[in-house]
Length: 145
Image 1 (cartoon, rainbow, N blue to C red):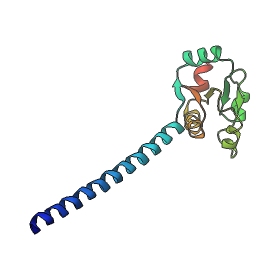
Image 2: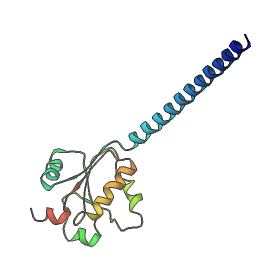
Image 3: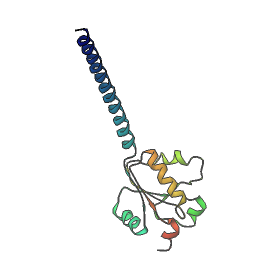
Image 4: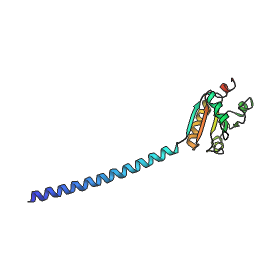
């Protein structure tokens, strides 16, 4: 009879351990899933590098766009896309200047050839902007059209 009692006690302890394991596993899954949902919602939006034709169409189709030229003021003065705002990528206050833009409106951006605007596209995404399009080839391509 003692053997049977010992087996019952061991079985009961194993059952309890399994319950604790299931609870622990469930809690872990809940917290890991909730944090991944938060991370993905922070990066929602549209951030694309587009060719000249698509860039041009978006400029014509959108009423509430923001056109951003991230070249130096000297480059901007030499020629720019109509209605573009110039924010110098190399300016020490560049990120704080970006904060002044409306995050809910699409941003069309370009630089001379794509380096600075590509980095800016990443910055806009990290800052929580909803939509941004970078002109592939930059103003160099635009000026040849």
